[in-house]
Length: 61
Image 1 (tube, helix red, strand yellow):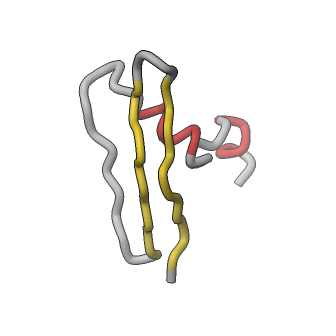
Image 2 (cartoon, one colour; image 1 turned 135 degrees about the vertical axis):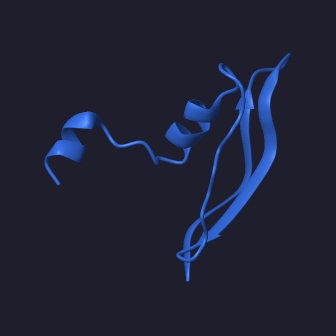
Image 3 (cartoon, one colour; image 1 turned 90 degrees about the vertical axis):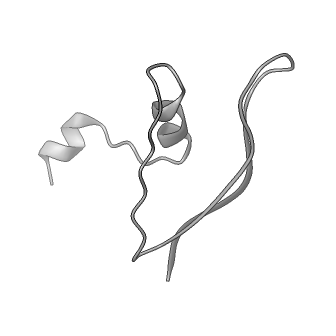
């Protein structure tokens, strides 16, 4: 079962792309690891995919 799917994501401007044409399709059995050096837009990607939950929401679960 697909739990997250997206196609052709872009982040950047006319001169610089953080990522371009990024597609993702995750099922409930998949494990996703986002790795890279500091400042390589890992958090930006997770925010765009809405996978980051505010700290107060984590405490209320």
